[in-house]
Amino acid sequence: MTRTILLELATKALARVFLPVAKVRYRRDARHHAAQWALRLRFPRESLAGLHPATKAAFEAARAEAFWRDGQLIGLTSGHRDAAEQYRLYKEAVRSAGSHQEARKWVLPPHESSHVQGTALDVRPCEGAAWLERNGDRYHLYRRYDNEPWHFELCAARPARQPHPGAAPLRRSC
Image 1 (cartoon, one colour):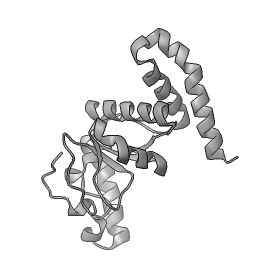
Image 2 (image 1 turned 90 degrees about the vertical axis):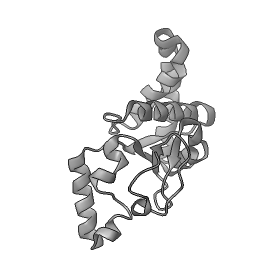
Image 3 (image 1 turned 120 degrees about the horizontal axis):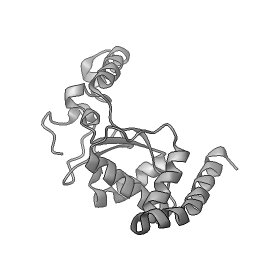
Image 4 (image 1 turned 90 degrees about the horizontal axis):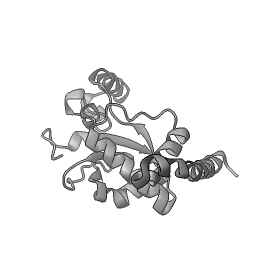
């Protein structure tokens, strides 16, 4: 059995152990909270800090449903980034890609990035991203770019999918 499978099984078992405690503390939202507690242990380095409150609520609700309904774990690789971090990532992408145009296929400058606004999520694993692509519309979480299957944004309505971040219009539809 692989490490990933063992961690997944342990996370599911922990959520079931946490459920009675969550029922006492949160009666109505017990499954939601038990899932969040277990997922925080499974993905200890993820941070939901800085996410827009609506984005955080949508992500937590979606991953709780994925967890309990389909047994799918969804973790957060990257959410909110401050402008300085986004700028650093963009400059590094320009350096490695050789041009601003090529870099924009993967990273946007801070004034254009939904990560800086706290409305973008990069999720893992691949199966979690696939689940979110199939079911995210119920939570207004949509995949925005063809070349980034892990990247989702909170939008009021389904936006047009773009080939890559640099192809999106400067004025966002979300």
